[in-house]
Image (cartoon, rainbow, N blue to C red):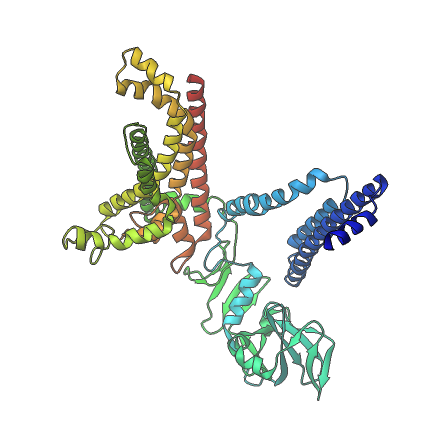
Length: 539
């Protein structure tokens, strides 16, 4: 019965005509195209929303140049993806934007910072430094009137909505912007809300009491007029600074001591005795960072030692890993060896294990007091693997050899398999010994293949930050250095310590070191690739 019904249904269903099939194909294509268009619009909507938020934040901070760039790029991206004539640009645009943001901008900005005094105490502009100095020395005016204040917030920034007790006018300001008149909502003669800002409740004020107490809203554009501060978020008082700024003379005077500090062009107000008021501001210093790195004895000594060790570490690491990997690869070329797959898995394990975790494990094993090597393998010895300058360097090289030889083993094994067997047979027929075949035939052919990899390995080890940071932390430290560097630090870890550790962080000096590293690696790479090209021509 069921078979009969299905047969009748098949007979009643008409076969689609060619025109109907064509219409169905067009409908399917249109449906797929519409899905892609909807996806494109959704992605562009996300990009535009992020750009709009960035524009809003930049507008609040008066970053007009960056705001213009973000707006122009957003408009350009929308035009490219909605235009039918820019098909190649649709594929190139994401890569170009990422290249500019993460590579070109980073390089240019690092180069710029290397010629400034940017660092601890010199982070912002001169106007910001003056405002910070005045704010840090505020004292309450004894006969200050009491201001009704309301704490407001916008995009994470706190502000004070102040009601003047004399005329009842409302004004709004932040730590960075002085009070300006605004149209506010009044309740009982007190300004309690303003458009574009969120009024904090009493509970919110209590929860953020530390931030509220740090608020010091300038009373006017003249920093000498003082600032409004509040302790409870309800009442505010006028505070004035013990420092007086003279814009015409470009001086800062301490009214408590009478000391006058002048702008000497070094990015800080400095007294005649050399005392500086901090924070200062960022200024262009030219080649001073490079000169200081070479002429300052407390920096020059560690810099020379670290540079020499960096070259030794990179060269020895590349040579040791390459020759050990090559030796093992040649060993596995022997057809009489059994259980090759098992051995290969064991040899590749160090490469498969994350390098930073491997360095941490080795750091624990090499601990002088309770490490596995001293306590178990050496029966309670106290060898200072990581605390003695010489032993620490030996330990770093050994651990890097353990981490790096599996990669060279894989590369050499593949390169050796690519050398025809006829080459070996021809050498044997000519009476060459195995060593002569290897040195005069196989090694030159092998170097043609692996030379670029060796150059890349040198560049990697020249900047092998993870191993040094995880294994020794750069220690043991130099005793006579003013910068926090040690005997096993590479140039890259030295740059990190100068920029991000210690009480005084000198980003300008660190950027100068970075530029020097870039020049050194670039020169070595250029020379090495020329040698590689000559090797290929010889081959």
